[in-house]
Length: 460
Ligand SMILES: Cc1cc2nc3c(=O)[nH]c(=O)nc-3n(C[C@H](O)[C@H](O)[C@H](O)COP(=O)(O)OP(=O)(O)OC[C@H]3O[C@@H](n4cnc5c(N)ncnc54)[C@H](O)[C@@H]3O)c2cc1C
Image (cartoon, rainbow, N blue to C red; front, side, top):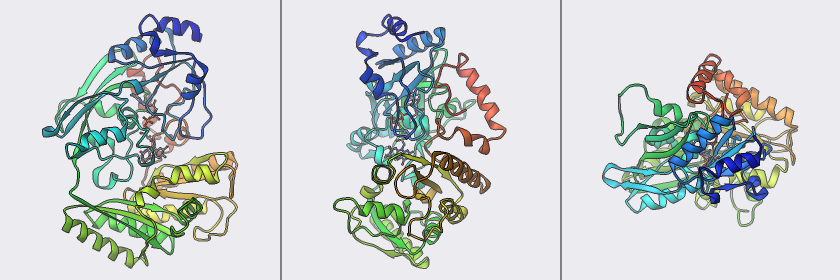
């Protein structure tokens, strides 16, 4: 079906203003925040209601048109790239907060509500939605976060998005509207269908409404940055803090090379060029302080020292992804998103850094660089392999290294994706983790998407 025919068919079920074939609109939805090449869809539509989404899906199913759901386009694995062409279903206009119920600590939203906006709004009730995609909180939508099971810095204390989803409304690949889950924090009623859609990256259905649980804003929080002589010492300290400091809400790792890039930015000449941990404790004032004391003790046991000159550690932390890409990877990056059990964290990071062909602690540029940072407290490690710039990899080398690093994570008992999802970028490594599971995933997909129109070419 060509673009004109599709737009004409859509105009019979949607207001004209919701449909676009303008080149600039198609270009705007051709890619996401990964460095994977964009693909132009033939049409973009921005529905405003569940009924409109269902009508669009029924039309697409009848005509065999691929449909790629899109939230904020901040995904890092190409999930929102319309790689099969077809239609981009842009959910950003479905951005109403439908209900806030402080006494139930609950909010009901349309999928296009952006993370930071939601937290500003529920913050007025003393509540917050803890998963935090850091540097993309101003772009990421709740629909996108549920669809990738996003997490971020506070996963250590508050878990990922999945923990907070109480109910969803979803349009399946047949155009059927289904509500699963509800308002209660837990249920034992039959199979947990809701969970199937969390992290399914738009391949099983389109989320049109989400009910989320919320957490009271902690009364106090305290933050600290600590420098370590080696990345392994930093990792061991991170694992110990995660295991033994219950007040620790976030334990983030940043390697020295990445910190070195930050120092090159205006106003940041004083940030330390060292392997860092950035830690936040939360709770009552005395608990925060006690937690911080334990954090300092653990750090000292691994030769860690408190550093100054970082300002708010999170302001720095949230700049990492973009800084690496903008200053030192003109051809983009190939990234890993593995997570490993905490006892294996130091080994994993040492081996991942060695993938670049140089010892992890030698700052002199090795043949190929591996920038490492991540949510160390939950074992999530992002390795960014630059394509272009100092220590560049060829795309083939970088993909091979990613496969090798992912295989190592799986061998250590971990996962190939801690939080970004599989998208296009990680498809080749999914089977390493689920050698038997992938076939069952295909069967599930066929059940909810029998015409194979929902985000084809992703995940599986
Ligand atoms: C600087 C930066 C920092 C980041 N930091 C983190 C981090 O710390 N933790 C983390 O987890 N992620 C992080 N991310 C990744 C990204 O922000 C998350 O993956 C986020 O959840 C994507 O939301 P989105 O609305 O932008 O989704 P999109 O990119 O638009 O889509 C992501 C996937 O979800 C699907 N989708 C979107 N909306 C729907 C819907 N309504 N129904 C069905 N499917 C849908 C899409 O088809 C696609 O497969 C970061 C990204 C950037 C650029």
